[in-house]
Image 1 (cartoon, rainbow, N blue to C red):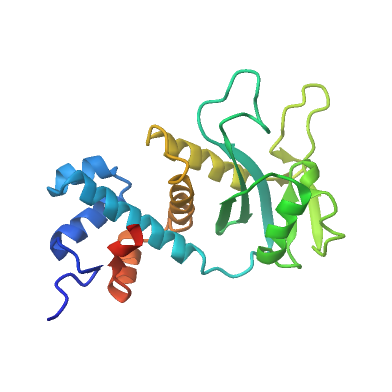
Image 2 (spheres, helix red, strand yellow):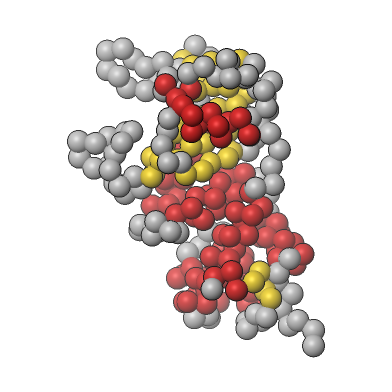
Length: 235
């Protein structure tokens, strides 16, 4: 017997409904809203959204080294800032590290901490040695030239107020800061995420950012046609 849904292995919904749901997902419509618009059970829509996020995470892994001018930065993503604990070390926030190729793609991932060994181990596998690396003054970026990177430009902080500067003397990390702003703004609309779900939502945000000038619906439809989603991934 031929498979009824070419995009969803042993799927119990029609291809038309799947494509309708995928269009709404590509537009970043929440699963609750999409379920109502397509006429699906909420749990079904939520499950398919999770499968699509997992597929985006798979596609995001297929990347070549970042080259040219590369911006690196760490951030903390999570609930509203806890009083008295701004910035690094703020409770209930998840540390994430990002690498952005100027004018191109971004890579981000959750990290255990923002120490020098942790951050530079990630960079060694993803940033070309010929790249010019731009960062802020965090000590985790000490010794990048000694580590093998061609050039390293740093942005310092105002000595009187201690507030970070994202552009200084023509050197900036505006690109990665823009990505963090987009990420936090986007994740706020989900009104809090379970810790177990956060990694897939983060990689989805990365993929959306990298595909911002492309048709996300067509990208995902082609991927699902080539390799149908499998609901067994959620079991």
